Image (tube, rainbow, N blue to C red):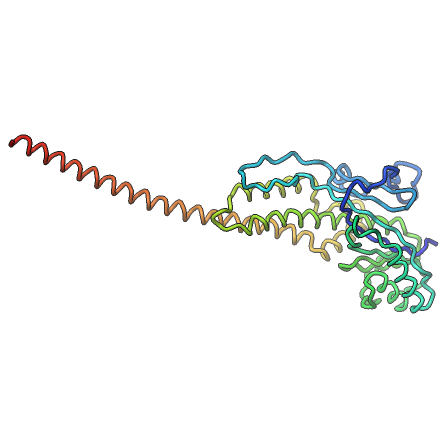
Length: 332
């Protein structure tokens, strides 16, 4: 039986932290062949991802969106010029062994708390663990086991047995803190794929936060300073990211169980919803700027019309004066 395991996902602040000794990550029953490499994602995602493991620590290092998108040209001096064409997201998965599930709850809490403190990665180099995933092999599913797993994920007892969704060989529960996976069979390689899927979800959210932050900086400007070319720049960034990396269904269709898992993760973290909100915000800002331009154009047209009327009046007056002078000159 596989040991009870807690996987913790960390966002990596400095990509130079990836050890040079890392090897290609392989999971499942084909660990000694290419078949063990990650294959269940859409091909373009696989092409632009790296899945590595550090043999010495057992940590995974997952890189998504590795291809550098062609630099978008600056359209004006007001464009924000961070190296935003590089969307690469890097995460470290730290694997920890959980205590024996049969011990008392008091002892479980004590040992789990100690493990979480002692094995926490350096927060100066990594963001705090953004999600936790617990894998438990057990002969039966009981409220006591669920209570212990809830503590490992949330540090509270708020997850109950009724919250779990029944799959063929396991029970699962996903929330914003992470995922708990209870099984009576050895399906650890399937659980490992769940870890990759949840990490991909946070990679998507991280890019959307990055682009959303850029959009907020533009939106904070006064309407008079906001330019359509700035919004077009951000719009183009989203379009480029979508074309290369964003999939509503990143799992290949033949992997039915994982496709369903992605739907649950997507619904919980609202990935599609947040993605659509970015487009909606850009459209709204475009509309505001267009209204401003329309108003300015109308004002310009009115001022031009007034200037033309004045000019025509001046010309008419000047013509009258010249005609009068000619008449005076004739009679004198």
